[in-house]
Image (tube, rainbow, N blue to C red; front, side):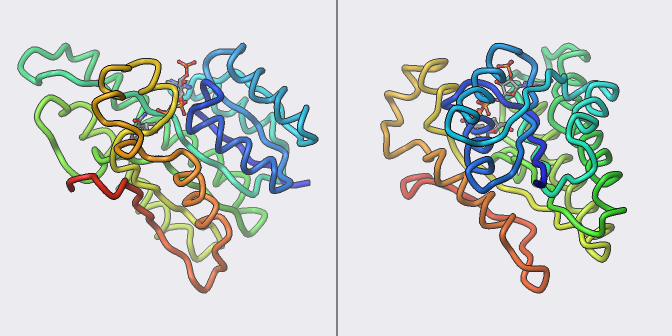
Length: 238
Ligand SMILES: NC(=O)c1ccc[n+]([C@@H]2O[C@H](COP(=O)([O-])OP(=O)(O)OC[C@H]3O[C@@H](n4cnc5c(N)ncnc54)[C@H](OP(=O)(O)O)[C@@H]3O)[C@@H](O)[C@H]2O)c1
């Protein structure tokens, strides 16, 4: 059985958890990576209850040691690695603490480098594999009040593009999914209920639709690879 390593997994109705469910249902053994043991154990347990295979592994994506540990848990045969970790970090640049800006970059970009490097170290000797990154509107454009988040997500995207060009010839498909708008999941619906109400169901992107984009990239044959898929609602102004 081949393995998928997925970093940045939180509550069940979040993108990370739903990526785990989808790829487990396709027959992969999923290494469920995240910061909070109870959340990732709940995801792994529900995959196992549905007949799939999953292992929860606590790993902070900004830690090199934790990222190596996450891939060690997967063993040698990693066919898919998804870096979903990412926290929005709003704030005006004039008032921003240096550590706040740096932490945004560590979570969204530096962790993505560590993760991609460990995936490559396992996939290149095997001659193949897929590495996918979760992007946001921030990956493509700067916006007032989001300078820390925009710059780190944009840096993640160009790092992924470089990785794609560097290792494509060695059989590694690197892809990026631009999530262009709010996700209709727990983070927005529970964390920002008034914002969710303002957007309404039609104004929030379906998690299943985003997961479909990841699956589409994973299933592409080597003679028809995409680097990027963008996903937004029909009512998004962009
Ligand atoms: N939510 C949105 O509207 C939205 C919109 C566009 C793009 N995105 C992107 O989508 C991805 C997240 O999807 P989601 O919002 O549905 O959340 P999610 O996948 O449900 O959860 C992401 C999880 O990442 C974990 N995490 C944060 N920092 C971490 C770290 N340093 N190491 C390991 N794990 C860490 C958090 O775990 P804990 O809960 O344990 O802290 C969080 O629960 C991010 O890349 C985000 O930028 C989200």
